[in-house]
Image (cartoon, rainbow, N blue to C red; front, side, top):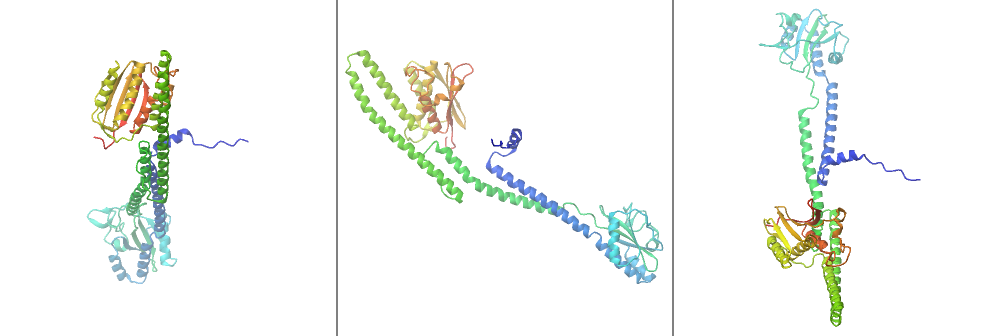
Length: 490
C-alpha cells in the first residue's frame, strides 16, 4: 500500500508569503519577535481594559449613593430651619439638593441601566424600605454667566420647593450622566438630588497605551541587539565560506562565542584544513608526475630523431609536443591556477596591449575598445593567462577578436567578442568541463585540449569573479569575464 502524499501548501499562497517575508534570517527573527510581542501587548491591553471596565461597573455610583443616603438620614433628624441651612449649603454640584412636598419623578418614567443601578446602590446605602425614584435628567447644559444653573433657571424658592429645574453647573461635563433622585423623608416630604455621576472611563487610557508602547519599544530594542548578536557569527561564517574559494590558506575562523558557534567554527576550520591538505597533496603528486613524465618524453624525442623516415619523425615529434602540452596544461588546470603570487595592482590596459602584440606577431587581429578606470588588484600572470585563453579561443573560431572594457566602481567587466559560429545554448556551460571540446577530432589544430576555458574560469573565480559565455544576437560569441573590485582597491 503506497503512502499518502504529504500535504503541502498551495504554491500561490507559499509564494505570496515568501514575497512579503524578509529575505535575511536577521529580518525574519526580528519580525517573529516583534509580531509575537505586539500580539501579546494587544491581548494584554484588551484584558486590562476589560478588567478595568468590570471594576468600574462594580463600583458605579457607590460614592454618590452613600452621600445621598447620609444627607437623607441627616434631614430626617433636622427641623425645617436646619433643613433650610443644609439645602443652602448643598446647592453646588456635583450633588444639588432641593426639597419638595410631592415627587416630580413619575413611577412610570423610563429609566436606563445607569438609573436602575444607581437606585439599587442607594437602597442598599439607606438600609430601609423608603420610596426611591431615579430618572435621568434631560436637556442639561451650563447656563452662561450662571455657573451652577442648568436649564432655564430656578425660582427664588427653587431650593426649598423645587420650583425650577434645579441647579447644576460646572460639575456636569461632557460624557457625565445627570440623575434626578428623589427620596421620601420620614415626615412625608421629598428630597430631590441632581447628581452628576462620573464620566464613563475611556476604553483604553492613554497612560496604559503609553506604558505598553514604552515596553514594546524597549523589548524590540533588546530583541534587535540579541538577534544581531546571534546572527553575526553566521555572517562571519558566510564571509569565510565565500573567501574560501579564493584562498584555501586564509586565516582560520576564531573559535569563540557560544558553544554552538564554537562548534560550527571548529568544523569549518577542520574542513578548510582538510581541503587545503588535499589540494596541496594533489598538486605535489601531479608536479612529481609531470617531472617524471619529462624523462621518458625526452628519451622518446631523442629516439624519434634517429628515425630515417622524415615523415614518421615529424609525426612522432608532433605527437610528443602535443603530449607535453597536454601534460603541462593538465597540471596547470589541476593546480587550479598555479603559483602563489601576491596580488598587486595590475595595469589592465598594458596587459591587453601585450596580448595584442602577441596576436599581431602571428598576423592575428585583436581590437581593444574602452579604457579601464583604475588598476585591478590581482595576479598579473594569472589574469594574462585567462585573457589569453579567451582571446585564443575567439581568434581560433572567429578569425579575429575584440576586447570591450566596461569598468565601474563595483566591478571590471571584459567582453571578448568574436564573429564565429557561436555555440548551441545547451553547450554554453559544458564547454567549461575539462577536456570537453566542440570539435569531434582530437587535433590541436582545430580544437586544442579542452582546458583553456576551464582554466580561465578558475582564474576568474580565484579573483572572486566568473567567466560566462553568451551568444551574440548578430552572431558570434561573447565571453564575459567579470571581476569584482574590492574595497581595498584604488
